[in-house]
Amino acid sequence: MSNQSNRWSQEITEDDRHDVGKGVFATGSAREIADHVIAAAPQEGDAETVDQRAMAKLTFYENRAGRNLSSERRAVLEEAKTIVRELR
Image (tube, rainbow, N blue to C red):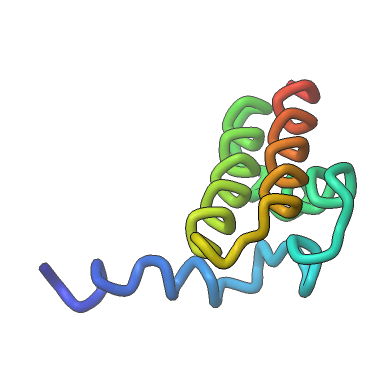
């Protein structure tokens, strides 16, 4: 495996062109999180592609937080995913 492929998550984390905003995942409401990930998703492509990118950001954050994510915050993220799905 190349060094570049070993660091894909770091590249995603550090890419500030599509930054969701500091602290949004940790303290925002489900609606705020959904709005931020949709706005931060690259807008190239059709609406479904934009929604998939927004969902990917939510899943990426949830996976990176792992066991450190409280059940309350996990529930908020799941609600944010539902909001993103409904906006399709």
